[in-house]
Length: 226
Ligand SMILES: Cc1ncc(COP(=O)(O)OP(=O)(O)O)c(N)n1
Ligand SMILES: Cc1nc(C(=O)O)sc1CCOP(=O)(O)O
Ligand SMILES: [Mg+2]
Image (cartoon, rainbow, N blue to C red; front, side, top):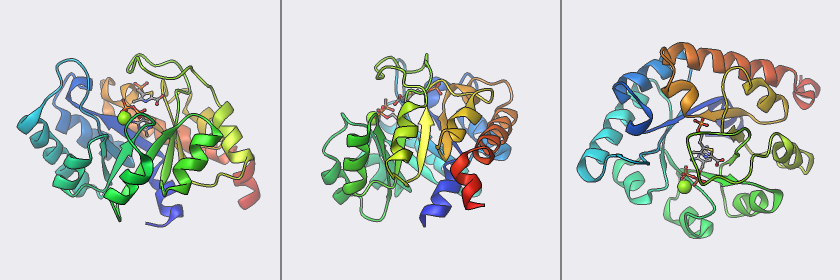
């Protein structure tokens, strides 16, 4: 996938696992994709999360849904599961291992890396990351071990320093604040709660997509390209 196509896929990046859903995870995902989510990450974490065979079974079921909608299926943290399922890619953070080793271990697959400053971003891209996750943009109730809330400052800093790779903002993002993230220079937003806890995940995804596109239109560098 070229960088332009990947940036399009970054617009509404839905992340979840069974612990994020109060109803059936497959149904939540299907609705999200119907509504316009463009990328999916399986992140089975937290109290009461599935393990072993049932975790793999859920991942396989969600991968099938993604295939039906032609939406790439990314695995959080777990290289073995990614390989086992022949998923489309892997997302890792700064504490998840040596990035160069991880890149070598998954040739031809998408690699997303969480970054929090220019140095981490440059390193991730040097070793071959395909996209960057930047956050937390806003306060989030979903993950406790985050870095301090950064607002738009890091996204702006990366763009001002010539980082042209696909970027998503993450953390506390909803339809009401997503446009600010793409206006600041991100290609899209990654969300858990905004879709998985919404009564109507399809509406949530659709509203996020509209907000993301509105922000992109008002991004100064996009205006120059047009
Ligand atoms: C798109 C995206 N961005 C950031 C993260 C966070 O990754 P990480 O810091 O490794 O934390 P965990 O998600 O593993 O708890 C992400 N998952 N996706
Ligand atoms: C998984 C994750 N990573 C973050 C980071 O800052 O790297 S914030 C986060 C949780 C995002 O969930 P919600 O959309 O519910 O706020
Ligand atoms: Mg991780």
